[in-house]
Amino acid sequence: MQMIEGFATADATGAHAERFDTLSYTTMGRTELCCSQTGFGCYRIADGIDSHRNALQRALDGGINLIDTSANYADGESETLVGKVLTDAVESGTLNREAVIVVTKGGYLQGRNYDLSQARKAQGQPFPELVPYADGLEHCIHPEFLEDQVTRSLERLNLATLDFFLLHNPEYYLSWAVSKQGMEQEAANAAYEGRILKAFQHLEQEVDRGRIRYYGISSNTFPEPSDRPDFTCLQRILDVAKAVGPEHHFAMIQFPMNLIESGAVLNRNQPDGMTLLTTAMRAGLGTLVNRPLNALAADGLLRLSDVRLPRGYLPEEIVQAIQSLVTSENMLAREKLPNLDLSEELRTRIVTQIRIGPMLLQQHRSFSSYDHWRQIMTSQLLPRVNGVLAYLDQQAFRENLRDWTEGHARYLTTVLEAVTSLYAPAAAERAEALKKMVQQADPDWDDHGTLSQVAIRALRTTHGISSVLVGMRHPRYVADVLQELHRLKPTKPNETAWAHIKGRLSELGLS
Image 1 (spheres, rainbow, N blue to C red):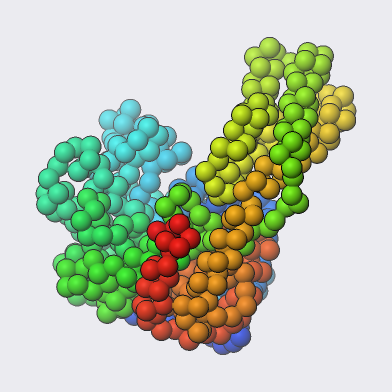
Image 2: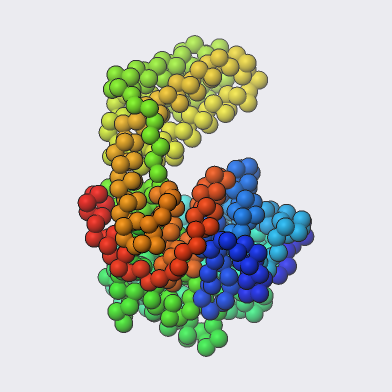
């Protein structure tokens, strides 16, 4: 596979925007690169999953020309998928490399990076200035580590040059230094900025080598109140960049923002009393918003999307559905598995993984919200059960289990829908109320669309935001985003509208 040469240019990205002239684009700060107002976020994207590959291809074909990934997303497999899709598109002539903006990040040591770190320690050559944050998790922005990470990212992405390389949540150092090491805040801030200075100096060398074009920082604490111990102050970061030199290539920041978390536009957390967005605009920085549809609300994680209402279930119907699932689980354990050529240890593991019914009998009314239930269902229950079903389906004895697996899948589907029916009505009502609240906040936001489209619209039309990163793991998510981008809307400061929303969140129990 031949490495893709070149990098995004102002002329090529501008021509791309002219080609897709019914789609919404903006200019990314002083780089003058033209970017789609939403970018393809790769947080949960991985190689080997057809829907992920198809979604990325659909986004590129539809005109989206910004991709945001990271070395630690899917343990590097996110970058690998992006590299394969870009290579196919460039080689086939459907995409010009100079028209697409590729952003990746480095800083986390998890998975393979963590194993690499432990191997280096065993050899007496650890990466310098490691932050041992948690079991299986370290963090580092030392030049030696960044050198390694840029190399690996370029290889996985199959690119000769990265358009942007971001330090990924460097505030981990502040959390560790203040909370775990007991360091005074002022000393921790000074050390933090010293580490960033060394990182910037190295990234300037990467620019000189032609391996990256620009660099920046992705930080969850950019928009937060300035008295947080792990607050990253943009103005002080700009001072660090100036110390690197007048022609520095610090050109992008990334941060969370959504309908619930609007600190970037409302919190005056800079030393001169300005907001994050105002400071970024004055400095000519490109700005990427992450988590636009996943908000941290008062009662936990809130997904900013329409809620599909399942059919209603009576309380006794829900219990009956769960009991049927329990019966099916017991049948596998008592009647099916003992007749299969499996070790006792493996049979025990299978039963443990698939048995979710007893827990649901006890707790199906105890989840705090629709989103809490959805999170448990999608991140814990379904992976467990589907993993067992997939394993059994791959074995030589699968014919002996066909009737059971098909029946169990039906029981599972019914149970999940039945439990969801307990929480979906209230969530749907709140989602509709939130959508109306946003549409009332500004005339330009008052248009048709799903809640996810309205949430994206509020962000992409706010002056100073270059692109909104949306996780589009399925082509239908891409279609939803592209439909919104075809609604051409002006960009404005929108502070009054954001303040209006924040002031009314308490009405929905979200403040």
